[in-house]
Each structure stands twice: as C-alpha cells, then as structure tokens.
Image (cartoon, rainbow, N blue to C red; front, side):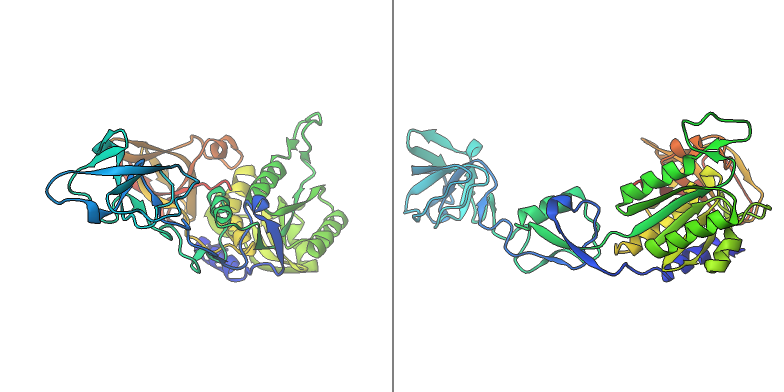
Length: 401
C-alpha cells in the first residue's frame, strides 16, 4: 500500500497528452483543449471608441478656467463613423462604443454638459484621453490571448469569436472505456433481488466523463468471470486511451480484476492509504492507462475526483492546475483513529463570520447521498486526530466539469 501523495504523483508523472489534433468550429469547442496558442490577429477593440454617451471634443478648444461653448456638427451612434476631422470649436454628439472622430482626444459625459440647440457648454477640467477606450485596450494584435493547453469555457469561445476565429486547433478527444464488474450489480429497471444493487457507478462515471469532454466507450456490466473480463479488457486496451473499471479490486475470491490485468497488462500500484478508496489499482492495459476503482459508490467517486479526473484532464492536453482549496472552520465534533489520508464529504457555507464547513452526515462508503449533497471534500491528514467545533480544516471544492 502506498500513500495518497505518491499515488497521485505516479499517475500524473506517467500521463501524457494524447497524440493527434483536430480542427473544430469555435461554436463546437466547449470543453476542448487548445493544441496551440490562439494569437490575436487584430487589436480589440480595433478602433479608439467612446466609453460614455456624451460629446467628443478637442481639448485644445477647452479652457482651464471655465466653460466654453462648442458647435455640435454631427451625431455619431455606435456602429457608425465620422470620416472628416473635427475643426476648431466643433463637437460631436457620440454614443458609447462609437469610433472617436479624427482630431478628437476627449469625450465629455453628457451629464456634465449644457445643450442648447446645436450649441453645447463644456465645463473646465476635461483632460486628453477622458472616457476614450484606446484601440488594443483589451487585446493587442500578435499577443497570446489563450495559451496552449487552455480548456475552453463559454467566455473563451466568445473571446475567440470577437477576434474573428471561425475554427481552432484542439487535441483530439480521448476515448475512455468504462465498465462495471460484479455478479450483484444489475441495470436500473430490472427487479432488484435480495443482495443485488443497481449500477449507479457506471451512470455517475459516464456523466462525469461526458461533462469532462471525452468520448465514452461504455462496455456495460461484466460478470465476475475471467473470460468475460479478459474479453472486455482486451477490447478496452485496444480501442481506448484510458480504462475505468469499478469493483473487483479488493481481496475477495471473486475480485478478479488484478488477476486478469496482470495477464494482459501491468500494475503500477495496488491499494492506497486513503479513506474512502483504499482498494484501487493503476496500471497499463494495452495502449491504455488503467484505473481500477472500488465498487463502493462513494469510494469510486472519491478516487475519480481526486486521482482519475486530474489525470484525464492531462490526457486531454489541459494545463495542470492546482485544486481549489481553502481553509474553513469545522462545525461539529469528530475523532479520526486510522492512519490513512481522509476525505470527508462536506458542505461549505459562507456568512459574516467567514467560511465554515460541516460534513454531509454519515460517511460510509455506500452512502451515495454523502457525495450527492457535498460541494467540498474535507481533507484530513494521515495521523489520528480530534476535531472540535471551530477548528480550522482544509477543504477542496468538488469540480463537476
């Protein structure tokens, strides 16, 4: 059995981005990962424009002592432009976002002026550059707007579109095979007999993988049978970039995953000093990375969130990011007796006193509601400890996409 940190470091060190790229439409790029940086082809904005509704003027016409009166020679809405340069003593009524007319170096907001017909009174104190957004204020042509390895979110797609991108180069989507093992596991919709459970693991994992943005190869339920398991593993190792199985990684007579995996691939580690999630496996299966998750639903989801998900993101080509963690006050009382890293399911709250966290209740490995209700994991060190009400703890936000 190895420690959690060693297990995580081993998996991440041995994971590389998939080979192959694809050219996709920006509108279809959600969740994909850039395989090369996106370079700005032009300034954004591509012209100096007004930050306010008001009047575009030349500060050379203004006074430092008092107001001056200028003649309004044009109205300039957003989307239009004035070709000629402004002359001495002239002003232009301008709307937010409209291009700054040639010769103008200041926009005076409309609340500060006095308008009478085509005459407008401009107060003292207006300076060059006031209320003008210069060309390239947001993005300068030739700059890197999104780096290689960026996993595209909605705002990223809007940004790329604002620069005129129609298509982008991304890493190909990894194929991740998922299967459940166990004679006691049945599909939902089947009458449940004593001793049987529905296959919640595969449903949750499929959803998590689809949210992540990979292609899912669903190999279904595989019985505790060497030949059936070997056939499923052979297909997964040939067709997938990663394989996730649930169940069969403990030490029972019918826990066959280790035996079959050794015959077709290799095991890098077996069992991790963490709770929940001690019985698990990591190795290789053909061309694929193999993740053997525990059959208990809470254990399987916890291992997926903490180890498998970061590895799959790296497999997708995404830049590594540290988990989102913070300190919070623990509410309640808890005694930890074992020597494994503990990951309690918790609910984080914020109020005027600051952040605080409570557990979701009973923390058994089969209590799936403890994961469904949680928004954080409460991270406890290996050594035994007692938590009292108000003690500070580290929490890690649960990521769902």
